[in-house]
Figure 1 (cartoon, rainbow, N blue to C red):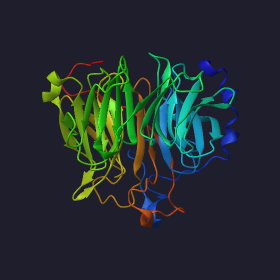
Figure 2: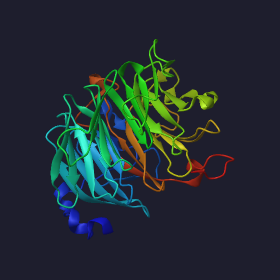
Figure 3: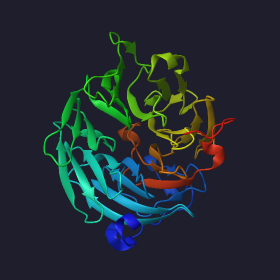
Figure 4: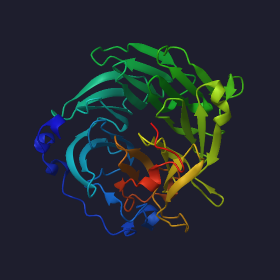
Length: 384
């Protein structure tokens, strides 16, 4: 907590309201009045005082074990996480004017950028609890990322724009037009990947951010999208040589930026159970080993090794049984050193209005201790 001073600098935990009691595994009400199974592992631990509505994004500080969640109840919350024992301590919570959809930490971990349904981008100072507007779109902001190498915030919106912000200035430093609404955004300097509606995938070299380095998409583009259905999430390889994109069809594409590596490109199926197919909601790379997580609307998350094309571990609260009553996993994120996974389970509306019971659908954010068997590639040396 040195970056923020004493732990109490964020305000007393009581600011979050009374602590919420969480029942035993498998004992919390869920969708459609059924008993919801939400823990993917018995050893996973609930974050204390989660938001009241579904989680739209999770983000870890790049320098400390501080976790941010944005929610459809308009809240943004911060916890300090102690990896030993997976303990969590509420530190701050504010209400936005509209549901926030995305969050990103500043490089020093002292503040958080967010954007959402009011078309605005803000910076939230965690120590002072003040939020300041730093950007504006003409439609909701779906994703944001801070790029320390160029000291700018990038926001991707449903107005089909990428805006780059020097947050000290009121107007964008640069605006890039996209072919469609931005549905996913991932940055690992110098690579930026923007995935849009109608299956467009644009890869930018941030040394020349105005012009796409590569454009995958519908017929007529230089290359076709590797996925046939709507793209939901993206992540850049830790070594910046490629990226992942996941779709609502329960499929992930592994793509390399340079043409000479195209023979390594492939897609694989995941988050499927018999004839039932679920969306891939989130992707996250381990910062050291290059393995990654997928999280799905089936209520599971999985560890994968792209190099050996193997699943390292499947985390499923249904344990191979019927997925009915399992809460979807909307987000998953490794912390800055890869020792802890945070994931959110809540209703994501992928099963429609009829499956939602607001009286029993609960939001949970859980912590999982990463094991070597889950995150180290099989038969390979550790790699960065």
